[in-house]
Every structure is written in structure tokens, then in C-alpha cells.
Image 1: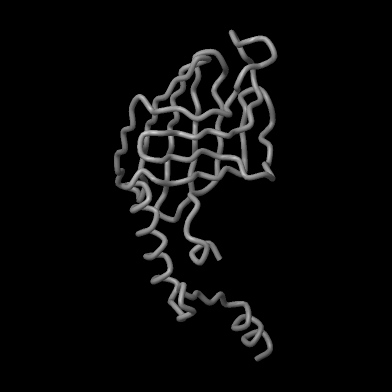
Image 2 (image 1 turned 90 degrees about the vertical axis):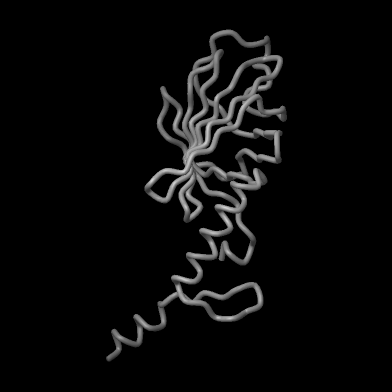
Length: 165
């Protein structure tokens, strides 16, 4: 009996922005709809919490790193570890810049995932961002550059505050 009470007290409850209780399925559907809408509108932020450089061990990130997409602009603020081949003296911009995208292609896959390829460039390098976003908001980002080794990140799409609880 005590075990049943303990399990019941651990059950997670979900609420909408007005405080109304929701089922787990309703909450997942609301999350999925918001993720799809943000991707469709090209107005979203990907927050990363893990980076995997090619020549180093994966690292957990504690600050709010990521990329923001606003229509035809990408705002990139990512840490970088890895080999650089041809960069300006002092390290250059790295992965901290804002620029217009030269291309944006989104494709819906069969496994509840949207695959997005973004190309951008600035005075320092050319970039390809390969982004996989699942309906639950989980995101995986690969960044390929002409003058640096590629790097991988994982994180999630920033949703409305009440959906993130």
C-alpha cells in the first residue's frame, strides 16, 4: 500500500498556461504542435547543452549557447574546440556571429523528425548547419566549416515557458 502511495505521489502532472490540468498525451501534442509551428515560421532558438568536438571528449555546457533563426538570419553563439586550418590572427569570430542565410532547406522525415540544412557565410568562413529536430523538441546540430574541423552539439528547441516545465 505504501509503495502505491509513493508511486502516485511521484506521478507528474501537466498544466496549460491557464493552470488547467492536462494529460501526458495532451501535453505531448501541444509540444509537438509548437515545435512544428516554430520550425515552419523559421522563428526558433536551439539551446545546446552538450558539445562533441572531433579530437576531444564530449563536454557538458552550462551557459545558454545555441543558434537562433529569425526568417533569413542566423544568430550563432556556440563554443568551439578543434583544429582550425586558416583563420585570422587571434582566432577570429569562431562560432559567434550573426549573418544572413544563403540557403535553408527543411525536410520532414518518417520518424517524427525535421531535418534542416542551413548554409551561411561571413568574411571569415562558410558554414553548413545540419539540424535534426524531433517532435518532442530534442535537437542535434552538426556544424561544418571550410576553415575548421566539424563539431557536433545536442540540445533542444526553446519552447514557451509553460511547455518547458
